[in-house]
Image (tube, rainbow, N blue to C red; front, side):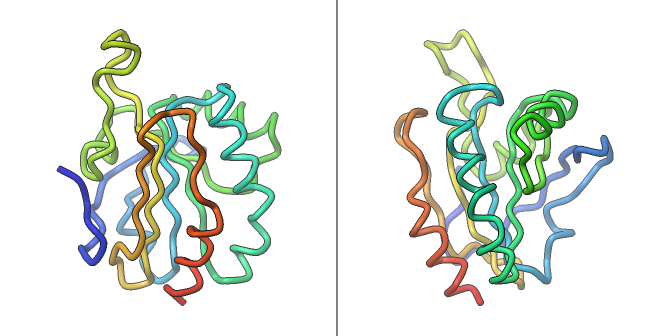
Length: 157
């Protein structure tokens, strides 16, 4: 089941880069971009997270925070983030709780060889915790429409 625009953002517990539990509900009070991606150290995912890194200052000026989310371990995400000098937070959904809550859990990647990566997707959540933008890629090699994401952040105020 997928989350729809206008709904309250589902809550889920993930693991931060500091290896501590974090809840999506703790993000209320600030516009949030949740950027789910399949896997660290892969081509399109690297391009996407580097683009969000490069847009970080502009999004931060709009009082928005960006959270990159994948099923990778927090150790993998920390190393990848360090190598790419990522500014956004990187959270591990190793237990697939957020992916399932947002309807972006891919249980048949590579013909079912990999069960449990995130479909590339972006959700913008306003300060009250409502989903105001949703984008889910049809194919894992497609990057998000970054201008649409920024426009949604601007509208969320």
